[in-house]
Image (tube, rainbow, N blue to C red; front, side, top):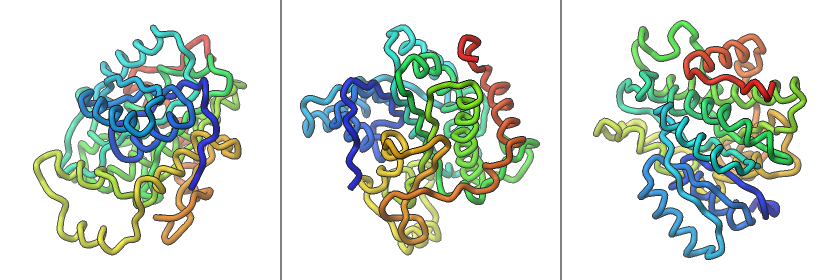
Amino acid sequence: MYNVPDQTGKHAVVTGANSGTGKEAVRRLADAGAHVVMAVRTVAKGEQARDEILARHPHAKLDVRRVDLADLASVTAFADGLIADGAPIDLLVNNAGVMAPPSRMETSDGFELQMGSNFLGPFALTVRLLPLLLAAEAPRVATMSSGTANYGKIDFSDLQWESRSYSANRSYAQSKLANLILIRELARIAAERGWHLLSTGAHPGFTRTNLQTAGASLGGARPSRASALLNGLLPSQGVEQGTEPLLYAATSPDAVAAGYYGPSGRFSLVGPTATARTTRRAQDPAVNSRLWAEAERLTGVALPAHAL
């Protein structure tokens, strides 16, 4: 079991904090002494999760706030609220995501749902919070990717799946490859500009959460029988173990810039945390730089002038 180092005095923000790996990350960060902002789409669910954590850890410092990563106006309002508070952010954990909706759906801003929720929303949040992150002594951004990034492909001609026949799985893989590129490009930018910011990433292997079922129920559908059968055959693990790569990326003194961590056991789906393989598709400087620029264009969010 990974032991989170002492986080006393640190201020953390965790997205998707009301369930699954997000909730477990909040619990263990708070237990280690961090003051955690639980960033959730549904406040009532966030408050329920907060109360459950407090029942186990009465001294946890938790603050529930609303953000919908599928709505850039909500991202702006959330970031503005934190900026108004003025407290430096030591750790941003980009955990929230959606997986495999039953059909092509769009965010409030007209992006394909998975690309918008999994990549463009977290991108905009990360860039908007950079002033608070860079005000901290040793800030980190830990972003959740997925093993599916290995077969993802960034299609600049159709990022939003408007021209192609929609594939929920390939769209998910593209969005998670984009997350992996975000991890690496942010690390590159930080090094280039001399920022004391560590950008890391993780994937949870096959961790049993509601992610696999929530996406497929968005439109009232259920996971296919083939999908359910495959899930039953693959090795899987509980959320305590599955959150450890993310916690390692977020807090370990041994984590490195652009480091990517995941389970080391069977098929890289279960087991103790180790360095994960980064697909070559996330290591092309031209593609990475182009995707960052495209994300700036689509979201209207750019690096703050004073941080250049």
